[in-house]
Image (cartoon, rainbow, N blue to C red; front, side):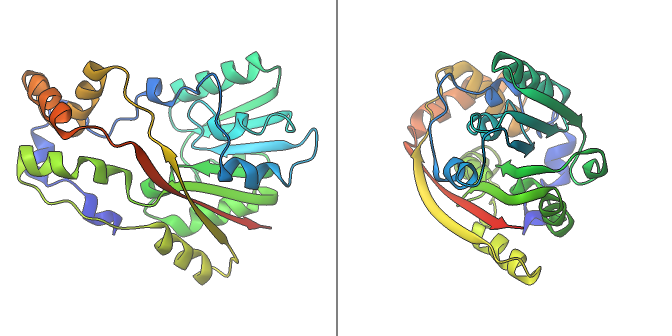
Length: 247
């Protein structure tokens, strides 16, 4: 299913910039981290002084929502800028912190185990999902908690791809497919569905800029992208799933 998301070569080859971007500015943590079922499922098994490993950590929302009771955090990410943010956020909270740069599970042997392992909004980027999930479980002493949207995050650009390129985009996979994989692995996972408000884009120009890059369009098309996004209106809610299992 993830293979179906590959961009046609003729579109990718003419792209002036790499469309597969994860701008660090979009992953900084908010001043107040809103509670969620994902945070609750992780927090309920943590004792005071516990440790958290956050895989695909970004700025560290999944980890720092658990401090306290956790006092030790480990961040894994393949972008050094994300790990810099993670370490700075840990220092601001006077937490013990380690960071490991690289792709999971390739760097898993370099990473210490933790009481809880969190992994938010990463699963849809992982084609070889079985070893990825297995390594998460191998590094958790108590529980693994994943969070992902009920629809692939790139479905938000479906109408834009159709408008600018006449390109039809896929729909799957979904959390149901991930649950099927876990069952085949012999893991007794649980899933909780919930929804949260979408954080409105406060910088329209920035949103148009990043969207234009993801659509493989040149800088001269940024105004068109901005107009298109404004005409589409804003989505106010996103549907999410928390998936967890004990080890």
